Image 1: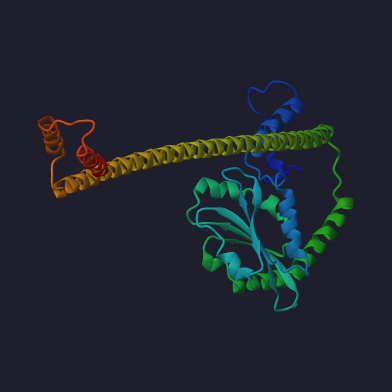
Image 2: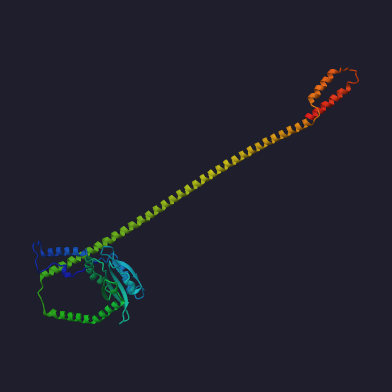
Length: 375
């Protein structure tokens, strides 16, 4: 819905004062001036449609007597004029006062108990911080009529720029003033309506066809503008929905690709770890084989050394025993054989001699003894 923040007569062309260098009929000039004014005002109007769902939900929570939420704060989305819900809570006016920012224009909706009636009353606070720039103050001031119309359930609308201005005592005082002025305003409105009814019959003026046509054209222009605005918003909502669906689909596909990539990397990492373990096991097995082979070779060499050492020790022992035996004998065998041969050559023997048997027997015993000694 299009919200008009200024008076209606400022948007229509001047009826009585002609403008210089005008081209076209009065109806065309009226439509052209209205379009220009509408284009200028549309850039400054507040946008209550983009986040309308959250705004309405927050307002309903505060109006609902069974809800514990008793305050909500609304702020502009960045540097735009789109109003959105910033925060809400159940801490009352004291908690709401701490949420206002010194450099931002904000709006607070709060539920306060009335001392006169005892029932809850709704207060709307227009907060413009002390550090807000002047052009932004002027722009936000033009949004107040549309915001009042949107939050029309509020009993009082209060402006504030310091935390000291946002107190429960001040809100109750303003509510008391509004309640006191309400009967007087109703009487004034009733008197105005009575005067108007009386003037209808007495002050009759002739119908101005040109004026009526201009009013009709102006109404048709605004109706067409509102219809085009609704179509534009519907198209914007449709594009937003399609864009949201596209982004959601892309997000799902991206998450799926990321999951597959993570699984692939995990499998590669597991395979690499398994390959490293296998290679490490092979290296350890090869090292064990080499160590075992070296140990067996050392054992064989040690055994060979022990055998050689044993053989050397046995030969040394045998040589020592032989030397000991040789040193213990009374006569050298060579000398014995030499003496024997010399004695045999000096004494001739005869076959019939009876003395030849004794030397032979002695010689045989000597050979036996000698053989025993050298064995």
